[in-house]
Length: 373
Length: 100
Image 1 (cartoon, helix red, strand yellow):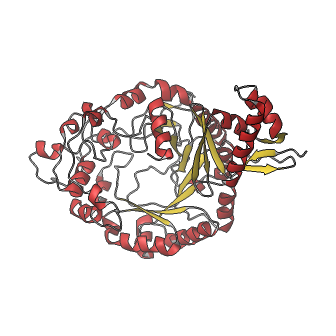
Image 2 (cartoon, chains in turn red, cyan):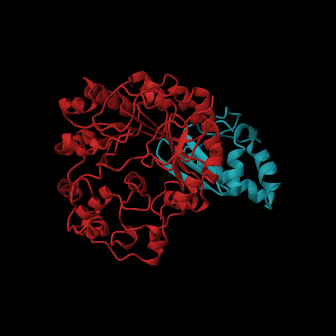
């Protein structure tokens, strides 16, 4: 086990929130076709409020801090927040579309010694990228910024969200990243929109195509292990927990709402009127999430994939039951290994019955919790 | 006899986890954990206090260590941390690059 993994496990066991994802705004200069956010400002936290939250996070033991949005540079005070975070010695990662980053911003980011910066690129073809972001010339501006940041010596990673509109472009984006000398990550996850609209799920990569992606050694290096048929779960597997959400990780929205994860819209408290550690330690919702072991999962505990599935409890929650299956992950397990999941078998399916999660389930949404006047 | 002064580099991220200090150098993503004694030295590395005083006040007084051995171990530790770019060493006072 690496030192990093060892520390992660230690934090998990001790219930220390080692990593937090903080969205500083939902406003954005792009209007990506797959985005799940409401970009209007419903009263995001002020500079002073966010600085206080950062103080509380440092006190709680948070080490890894991700700043994201929306587009983080839509906040005029973003560098002030970043400076405060670095003064508190967080390991900071920034997620951005980089459209607003020029040489000056790249230089400031370097001077602040952030850990890394992740930039969304949807295609190596400007027309496709711009059609997804709905911002003319965004590809050109983003790639220019990638070069500025790389030239500063920053660790840059291109995040390639894959959907039906850019399905065939991941080879091109991967090559682009290689030509630019930056890292590449691929993510085929599309989540329902904040207002409960699931129509965006039609953009999800069809299952058959997922199989091709999973079996591509250029994208998934450890093929044999990754695509191996599932092993029978051990007792230890069944005693295990689904993921770090609520155990050593959580998410904070621009309105101060705290959730177990970015993809887990279960409100657990609000840092505008509660201390972060009080929410983390005492929220009944947070404690419920962290109490769930693999053996407690209603369908998945009897599934052959239970020990190796990427099952996201947040996506399961959005399907109606945080202890239930996540259809998107059942599909991934099937197309990764060729073995049907328990969720598919109970529905009499030998392969995924459709590409989409149910569209009639009402979603609990990420939205501002009412703040007392 | 010249003094040794130590200050934390501004390139690092650090946090205390159950008595051990996690330290990461953003320049090369190297990751360290410091034990209790090393953490005490790290926390006192303000660039102004001589290492000898740090060892006397923050190591010998807090932990049961023989002063000569503690000084030798501390010198080895700060040299190693400096080689990894997470601590600055000088024979004159330094400006600490991070908040204490």
